Length: 271
Image (cartoon, rainbow, N blue to C red):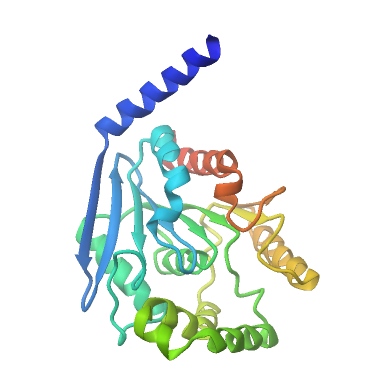
């Protein structure tokens, strides 16, 4: 009976919060194409979520509600160009163009001031670039098994790009240009990001999966090593090994990630 009462109370609280919160689902013209944003409006510092490669805003569905409930913050999710409901301009691809589009979209929406970042996988590269370009605006970041330039030495990057090119057929280019150019631009994106270090002044919680998306033991060890080295670069950074979790840590252990986001947000907000 007690468990039922608690469950009903939690359900009521969540429903009340959902009823009060306003959701903006919109397409924003960012110059030649449109980005799809889904924004759960709240207060305080907004939190921008950067999905992994090939994913869209829906990848965060499992944790977005609990994060909103516990922070009451404005939560910004979006589909990168060519994914989800966002359109694509084949003349403007690559991470630098993608960032320019995001910045334009956020400015038009009125969210170009203080912000917190949450990034997963390749979305970590976008979080890194945004932080490097706006070090005074980014107040905290939670990185979830993100891609690092450290991991992709020259040989590994070449092999990875070769595998991607093999899968990047003309058929894919015609049917899904977003996915095609994401793959085609991979090496260039990594090389571009070597020029943009994540500012050491920004507090970061960096998760690394216990079971990264690789089979080779050397790759697994290098992936974890790069995350350890990143966390060790600043006293502002906390590295966490997500025990038992795969690449999608926020799906395998939602409370672990939710708690980290709430803690980082609380600290950044001075609450």
